[in-house]
Amino acid sequence: MKLAFCLFKYFPYGGMERNMLAIASACIERDHQVTVVCHQWHGPGQRFLEVIKLPVAGFTNAGRMKEFAQQVITWRRKNPVDLLVGFNKFPGLDIYYAADTCFAYRARHERNWLYRQLPRSRQYMAFERAVFSVGSLTEILEVSTAQRQRFVECYQTPEHRFHTLPPGIARNRVMPENHEEIRRTTRQALALEDNVKVLLTIGSDFQRKGVDRCIRALPALNRKVKPLLLLVVGKGRPDKMHQLADSLGVGSQVRLLGARDDVPALLQAADVFLHPAYEENTGNVILEAAIAGLPVVATDVCGYAHFIEDYQLGAVVYSPFQVENLVAKVASVLDRDRDHWRHQGAHLASTGDIFSRPQRAAEYIEAIGAKRGIC
Image (cartoon, rainbow, N blue to C red; front, top):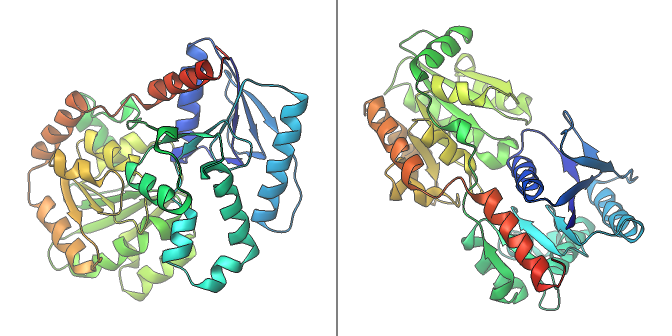
């Protein structure tokens, strides 16, 4: 089949983008042709992919996305493909990879009437309706069954259009045999003393991922664990986080490292992984950290938080969030020996279905094509 994968912006460190590349690779391995259609592509190109960049104009992000969606439809008319697979919500998709939460649900239950009337909100809800409404033909590859109920509540989407995917964790996150050597050299490169306890959090969009919660926990944690350092990896607004840390007197204990390619090594250098997100559809980083051998402390809003309890990988902080609970959970997991958490992570890696998302997504894409008489 000729497939077009559509997303507005490619950023090499985003979880959705990495999953897009993995699914594209799996489809190509099954002899399908994949073209990526986007507005922006940041980072290196991929040898196995043709990338088409469509220029758009507009004063707002929502306006640019609207024009991009129209341009994709025009592009498809001139360049026929068998299936259009979207990684953002757009009209005209054959398949949508549902990495985002339900916008309409949040607008109804977490925002006021005025927010729902804003042009930006109205457009995003219109895009979402084009995917999930009863009359839409778009098939949905979901990564979180919890979000399904919200979409059904808002749009009455027929259940048969949802296809559930397992996690798709990269195997290079599994703790390697030379993990102690990697830990030692990485900590040396970061100028960390052996006795420093390192808290690690990873994720772009610092506000949504709860980086501020990690920082707010440090003053109380300092009374329980010393010496302590927080490493923040990802793309966000570092100025706000630095200001918060300085205001709490922990500025010297927070390092914002930006987006990085050496995440597997950083996982080995850390002592606990924090993911106190405000909102998180899944949370691949939870599983990545666990199979790297780290204890994980995450909020219950994360779609993959259940893995923490199912496989005893650390601790879950329940809603309503209180920083005192985060502090207590972090202190408790740090009391356990590192070998304990490495054993738990190895058990997840060897018994859990956490690697097969790209292959399963390719199978669903083929099945949808077959149902439509394409292949």
